[in-house]
Image (cartoon, rainbow, N blue to C red; front, side, top):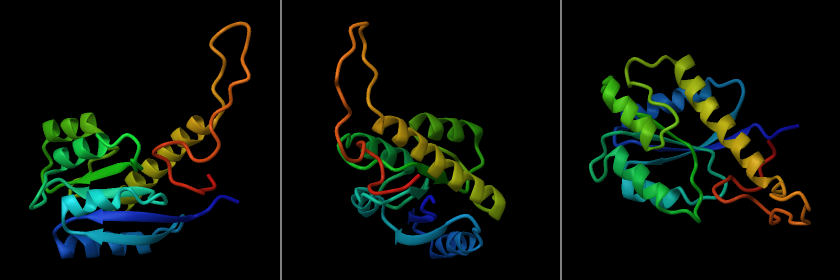
Length: 167
């Protein structure tokens, strides 16, 4: 049976918003969560290297970094864990949403307009899509020539994927 416990990092400078997200997480019938919270983008980046981190909920506007800077710095660390990021904002601007997705966010819920169900869907989609990618990365590479090769993927977890996780 697949592991149904997930670790989530909430990076938001608003204690009220973090409390709302925790409340939504408690309503989830599919997963249980360990929640790590941070109010700083820089400190949040440091926490992203945890091998068992499944998803990051990131506020677009933080005192030290904005969400775009955060995503850029996270993606610039290729040998580190790069969990999926759901970017949250109070701005329902379509151009900002497109920019967030192009920057690597998996979803862009708008604070105050997101129901617990929409929040759940964004979170589950990010986790499940990330795990599908990790499964594909951990499969042996197919030979590129007709002669075939005995090449096998390295043992262990694929780069950027949560460690020791049953999918």
